[in-house]
Length: 407
Ligand SMILES: Cc1ncc(COP(=O)(O)O)c(C=O)c1O
Image (tube, rainbow, N blue to C red; front, side):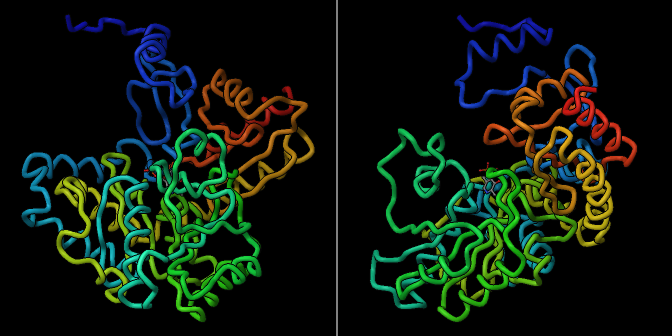
């Protein structure tokens, strides 16, 4: 018999989820019912400031009116055609996103992992068709500490034991080098290398920013060795760091931008690979695809995201609020925090182990009405929606200060 669930209280819904879902996450015990801007409200009416923003998928906050309007308008007209037919939002989305990135072509997918898989396929195909790499011998250079998603191919080149343990055998063709070490990366490039796949800022490792000049050095090495540079900007891109792309901080233009998260405006999963014709042009009908990739709703929302980013307003806001956040976090160094890394409105903060773990600090923050996410034991990532009010950001950071200083 099918159960009709009548539970509505937070604790009951937490227990239900624990009992009836796979435990592939360990969420904080909060059950959100609605949200607006940077604020979420749980089923029991408690309000929380969102300092995670859906891992940057909610860069524009919850329920941004322009994004909701785009979604509603599209919902009433057309939601799905599959890629067997064109629809009126498809070409426009691809052209507008391509222009934002300064590239000719766009290949829309749904999730970030799919965009990364697409990148891998395109890079290999380019390697065989254009570079002349012998069949089935293409290699892609990746970085230690990477996080590019959860498919079997992708976790196969991760070095995180939780991500890969128990999921082999894995696809060959990947070489891992230390992140931020240009000499090691250069040494790994050879005639079989088709691409370097990197996050311009490593997120799961705790918002790790490579040394100045690293991305530029990678760009130069890739150009010199005839290797594609694919930048996974799924989390770092689209305004988060105070620029449209994190690569912009070093005036670096990769061959392939890998985008996701905020591209869907926090409404629908939208990802994309963005590159010029000499790269994405290697794909022909039947060689790659997705039923939902580039669907009308995704494209309508994605067009609005691109239009909002084209104003530069959100990048500027991330820059300005990011400086404020940096100042506030720096003041906590030696007072509960042992390290702070920021770029734009994005921070990785390392908690003094004497205070507690990342998780215990997130739990204490939750009790004070702030939601954030720990990573790798002692680190907390802060990625507030870019629309957050400065006073709210200050209040959220006051709560962090109180937790880590025992105030
Ligand atoms: C840098 C990066 N790449 C890829 C992914 C995978 O995206 P998705 O979870 O949408 O598959 C993520 C998700 O956190 C990410 O941060």
